Picture 1: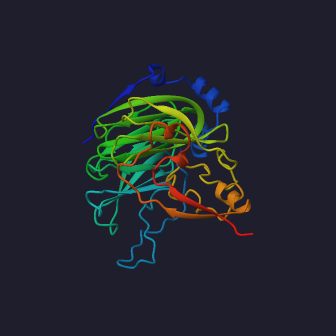
Picture 2: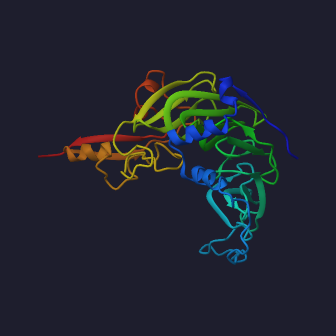
Picture 3: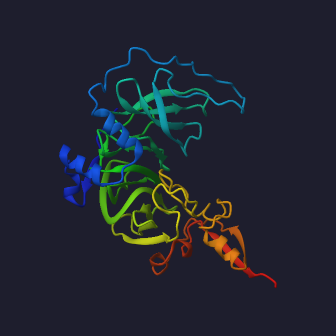
Amino acid sequence: MSWTPQVRFENIESGRRPTDQEIEDKVTQGRVSNTALSIYQARKRPSFGTPMPYAPSKFARRHYPGHPHHAIEISDPGLDRSDETAVAINPRNPRNIVAGAASFNGSQFDNTAYVSKDGGYTWKTVTALTNTDEGAGIAFDDSANCYYVTMQGGFFPVCVISRDGGLTWSAPAAFGFGDKTAVAARGNIALCGFDRLNTEACAFTLDGGVSWAVHDFTDRGLGTGPLVSYDHEHFYIIYSALDNNLKMYASHDQGATWTGPTTIVPVPGNAPESTIAGPLSYEGGALDKPGDECCDRWPRPAACPLYRQQQAGTDVHVEQRPRSNVEQPSECESQTSWRRTHVALPVVHQARRSP
């Protein structure tokens, strides 16, 4: 059964729907995700929405029970395409899996949910949202609410919520004009990040998606990686700033107040869609796990600060810090750098090389 979430805008102007000309101006002046831009342009063609007289043949779904070396096609073979995927597992029922993707049925772009209730052996195709413009961002909270973020009807970030493991979805919670969505969830909380071509913004719910608050930031960036702490108190919005730094906004009171922007990685290779390998290089998609893979994920890139220390004659040994459920950055640390916080970051030990 569908229901409609309530959305409150801290900045009333952010909830105003721009005119077509204002959208054109923003798209021309701003940096836009490739998928949203291509779909936006496709909709303006005179032939858009007219099904092709024929479509490539589709293979039936294939399933190899108990065989770990064969992929299973979970998307509906009747769809023309299904891409920009995401997947999440229900923490209260690990056999409940929800995957999502932007799909095209020959005449319209939708966002589809592929739902399994038996650990992936069988799948059901569900339309989560129609008339959409971006791929899927999916997350379960600890209360088994499933959040699906994307963009609908142009450059308009939205989130729909399922309370039955992905089989039915709410009406969309609409967050105003914007681009490039992502979502994270804990407890009964979800945090969605996006940008307003190209000013950062976020929306969050503290009651399982019943009501949302939308907050606008001031810094310019493209794309976000939202994070919610294990104790449900601290929110983080990480983004690739247009000044080529990786930055973060933080709230330590569940979105009531925010600090930032704080520069996390001020080195080359963190520009939007950069081809230079950096410690947390953003390459056009939503950022995922800052910290865990920060410095040992790259094959000794020149941009990595640890690599530069090695080149200067310092041995650097990295070991993983045990993750704490309650360990959070202090007030002073949150104003300095990401490496000084205590959210799943590596501990770095240095030893001077012998002559």
